[in-house]
Amino acid sequence: MSEEHTTRRQFPRIPVENTVLIHRLGPAEQEALATTRQIGAGGVMVSSVEPMGVDSYLRLKITIGNEIVEATGRVVWENSSEDGAYDVGVAFISIDSAHHERIMSLLKK
Image (cartoon, rainbow, N blue to C red):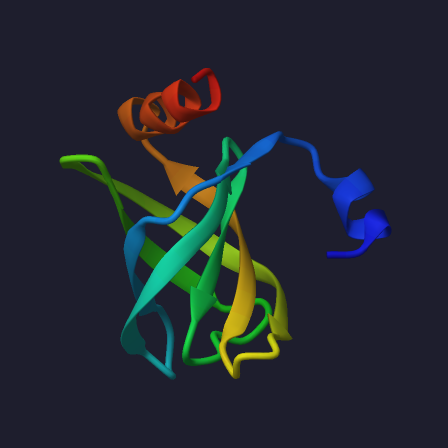
């Protein structure tokens, strides 16, 4: 990730690997399983075998321990990685307060 991208980030993130079910919303709907790479109060970076498309809206179900954290987000960037997968940056646009607090508890550890 470029230094410029890192300096634009508003929220701290931590590296984590969790399973996430992604449901792309809109006319090109699709569901896919992915893995989180980083998570923070403002969004998540996932690794996906399928591209999601910049500016796509996603419904996310992220497994954190024994809980499912649900959020809606927008793809703000996407890059293909050397292993053929896609690194996808998703900004949260809607997340309920309890799920937001669960993510915040991860950041405080």
